[in-house]
Image 1 (tube, rainbow, N blue to C red):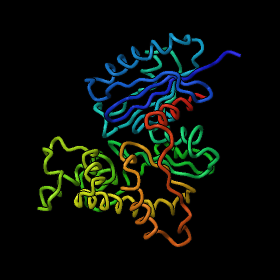
Image 2: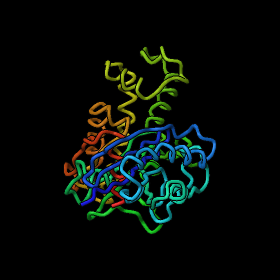
Image 3: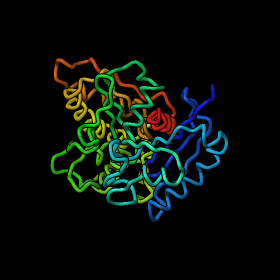
Image 4: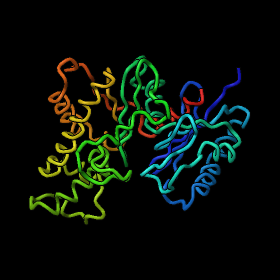
Amino acid sequence: MMQTYALGIDVGGTNTAFGLVSRRGEIIEKGTLPTNTWATVQDFVHAIALRLQPLVDSVGHNNIVGIGVGAPNGNFYTGEIAFAPNLPWKGVIPLARLLQDAVHLPCTLTNDANAAAIGEMAYGIAKGMADFLVVTLGTGLGSGFVANGKILYGHDGFAGELGHVIAVRGGRVCGCGRKGCLETYCSATGLVRTAREWLLQRTDETELRAIPPDELKAHHIQQAAANGDALALEMYDYTARILGETLADVVALTSPQAIIFFGGMAKAGDLLLAPTRRYMEANMLNIFANKVTFHASALPDADAAILGASALVW
């Protein structure tokens, strides 16, 4: 039998990862390109089509079944990205159609975190789980809800927007235009915002003062916390409290068996996840107490999203 393949694309706020994936979930070849350096989405599609061509040529166009894409605010039903706050292009973007026209292959698109959830379900830690939640901690905060073995899309394709539940009433202004959204506190960008605010307001000694504020990144804070820096550890605790309290509410909605974390910030491991779990349990409705397990994704970061996006094709 002829081996068939899918192309999986993960559009992130900073970088886009893509790969050629076999039916069994092996990534044959992969690559990345920056997302935010293209003036128009047409330029971006042209650039990615050029990068995909060698992958297509390597196995033959006829052996590729289609393209699957995970993207912020991606709508499974329409193939469009709608008003994604962390992408450089505004409004509604018909990305599936643009890619289909550029690469001449059918294209299916979903929310990036849904793609990660599909990847976990097909090839990762959630194999065999019917109820779980994937939380992606990157530039923003994404989520994919699986209930009764199916991704929750809702009637319009946008269900499960955990990054935009209001975690702090009247809190920080979000890219979406509202105030206090979870991702303004519990994402790489949110953690950096906390650090910049605190470094201005407080006088604590910390190794973070050695870094110019506009060059400060989440990985600097992670490194400082790992070194035992008291202020950096407190920043993680603050982030974990907001995330844990919010997750306690979320558990009451779908009663997941597990919450799986991935993305750059999840790499902080127990620095973030241990206090998050503690705050979640401290705020949990008693019927859900100690029932939900935490996992860091076992799939390599970009791989989970590429695999999940490619699984859309099958």
